Length: 143
Image (cartoon, rainbow, N blue to C red):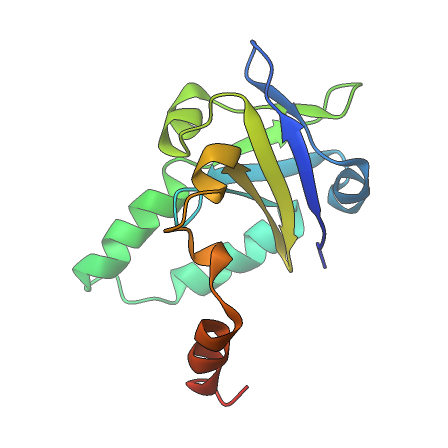
């Protein structure tokens, strides 16, 4: 499981250092793709395959499912770490997540989320929900 929050940045060549704790769990490769809420997701190769198996079971007759598959899969790229533990974020993914310089990299159980610090810090960001809002949302799932 990935956990923890790290402040880092992207360089002029669109490279970001994946925190070593996360990098150790990923091995030498990972998959980077568009996430929800205007962030990017990093998956280990094994967790990516599990996600693909789940997605393959969804009904493609549903237009929302087709849109989700396009959002999630069409923009996925396989990444290998360089000697400094960096991966390259393609320009299209960088634009989607509104990444300019500063990043928040956080573990989110089976994936890593990469956020533009500016997006993360906005009041509208769901990651900033107050405890009452969290409690209400979790009640719906008997948690």
